[in-house]
Image (cartoon, rainbow, N blue to C red; front, side):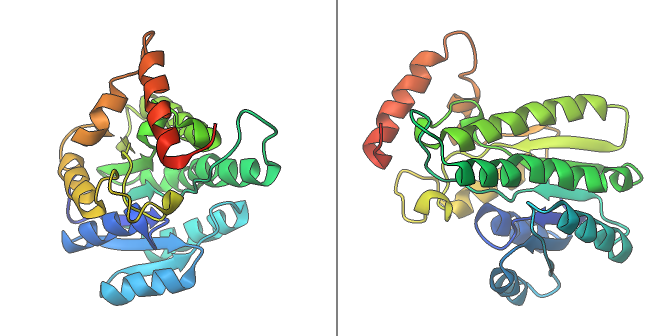
Length: 252
């Protein structure tokens, strides 16, 4: 992906990784538009980054997605990069009765939302040179965290969807990228102060460097053991990882 001269739309850009990517790409000379549900967060980001724009979006609402997509195409016809970053993560109970509200909100935000957002913009993106659709998955797409089983499953779904879409768009101008972060210090699971988590600024710097290459998967060094674990012998790594996680998060 070229790192400047783009018009970039980032969902969930009001905090965490979304804000970090937005600010980094803004500084590199891209036109950046961020979206989210919390207007106060969006306003804080654009106030700190003159020239950046923001639009309110409820990623769980198809009508909101269609409205935002139409406005983006009308106001920013040069739009050529979509980064599907919005997501939620909550502890759940896969060993017992699942909370229906948690299940529905997580699926709607993490799976239906990015698929619908991409669908609303894909025909436009096909008209742009060097267009990009990027999905924020997670290392938990490859090594699930059992105390957030639903979240992990949504990220596995996004990984699978990105593989399919990359193949189907192989003869177009649109590249499909997957950004798979490790545990990063963000609001998710109240991880801002977690010593074991990767500092946000470090992750953003490493991720941007890889974005500037021809790689279809943005996997920083800390994430590589998780990405490389998939296979018939994966259970030992998964079980060991979750034994360690129980000591941190509890449960089970």
